[in-house]
Length: 185
Ligand SMILES: [Zn+2]
Ligand SMILES: [Zn+2]
Image 1 (cartoon, rainbow, N blue to C red):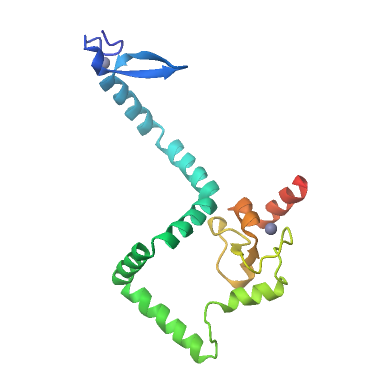
Image 2: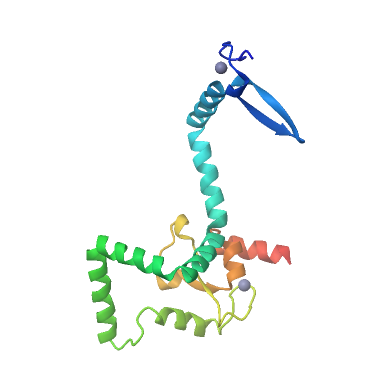
């Protein structure tokens, strides 16, 4: 068959097939021409592709986190391995965290790091800020102004949401999410 693109005569095995409604159609350009065309398109549309990947990743971040938690639960040995490797690579960070932890212990905090969660839980009376579901057994720490929109890790920018609200809010600013939530009701 003659390639429509490069006009060389090539055996059928050097053409790709597309299957539409169960019928196989042979491409009019040879495999190497097709590959070159796709590569060219990818290079020209690099920023568009990266943007699409980013949008997809943002939308699925919450589901991916839930999935990795599940994976971690069934692969404890792999988790320990990667934690060891991380500590090995980030000795300074590990040391600093240790100092912070000790400082908090000395200041009378018996469970450093857990305090914020407890404070928020108490403040919110164990309820999701948006849908008032009971979140005492399962809650997600959420940034009121998302980190991707410039929000920080300070106490005033944190709240607890139920997993479902947190997944739907995702990287949306709080005000926008509340408006959408109320509209949907
Ligand atoms: Zn060709
Ligand atoms: Zn909720």
